[in-house]
Length: 218
Ligand code: G3P
Image (tube, rainbow, N blue to C red):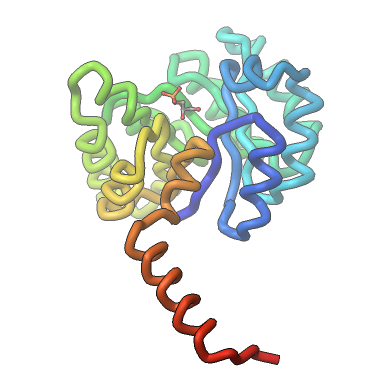
């Protein structure tokens, strides 16, 4: 499973890139606003830190506007992935951009029918938002399971399922069990994957027992 981080905070991205476990980055207009920075500047800096796909979302909602903004974003770096909304104009633009060799991440997906359309439009990634479905009493992970099942029926489909709106480690494990290709994680959720009290306890015991030997490894 590929791990992307869902943030535009460059300090978090630099820190997590050092783990060697970061495969890409996703941003959205809310995350860009939270960064307090100009989108072109922060996306350029992220692309220089993380060589994998970096999703930059258009602000336009009409086809011509999306295509115009996508041209600007693509010029930033080769690993920029254009993020478009799952709308008729967004998927029309997805088809045109993917046909032109651009990576496209289709976002705000909340149904299997939408995911099927995005795959037919040549999306590189589809972003189903599991947390936001859970938030209103639906089973977000059931959507992931449906999409993976549908895509697996058509080997010619190359769209990768990028699980988004992840709220906790259990979302990550459930998505991995289903076989989703990618999960994009808030920094805090990614860091929480390391944590287990028995690991901490066991390491403390090993260190205490090692100290008793009076040895050093040199
Ligand atoms: O960036 C796309 C998605 O991961 C955002 O999800 O629900 O945390 O805003 P959310």
